[in-house]
Image (cartoon, rainbow, N blue to C red; front, side, top):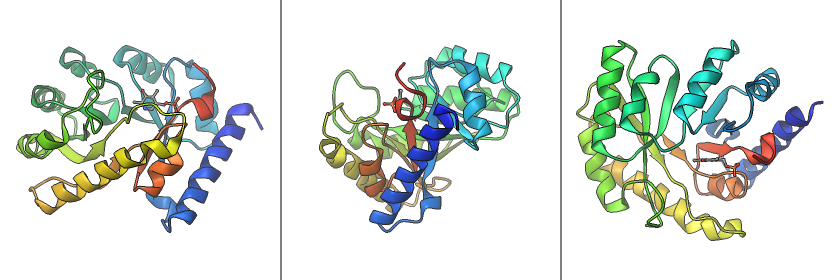
Length: 229
Ligand SMILES: *Cc1c(COP(=O)(O)O)cnc(C)c1O
């Protein structure tokens, strides 16, 4: 087995184990392989071992790689997104994890309509920790933002995403994951038409097991699969 195939198998086994320990169906957690700053060749290698969803942070890099690869890949944009870059994404990405402001959602709606692509699935990024350096709407503003996005016809809210502060101890991230889950429940209770709170995108190489225990449905794992960047 190649190193990447081996790493993928290990990560998948850890996901299954975390599901068993928390009484969850392992089919309810999907792995987003974060390939940023790694060459397209490693994506082909991971795809050959059955990995389907790949996450990229930078629009130019994502578009370049998508153009180079013929593998049946589902691309997710997981990095901070500037409105002027949105136009490159319809027809390529199937989910954007980082919608944190109405103006960005409006631009996604406009570009998806222009390209006559099916509506774009998005997650609302919430800055649960309130760190000034992190993107994301505040927990308080999230409900209203979801309500406003829900009125746009070519964009569908499918859930929430967060990035807690970095800790050496993954347990320290747990309160942030839990808060995102509770916020999703609160938004679900609002029963906003067209809004689904089906996905919680949380957990990275250092803490994805804890995130799964707290309800993650999409874990974004880079280093544990592809090595250091
Ligand atoms: C880079 C990145 C990841 C993956 O981080 P690793 O620690 O390498 O697993 C996940 N989510 C986002 C938003 C990232 O930018």
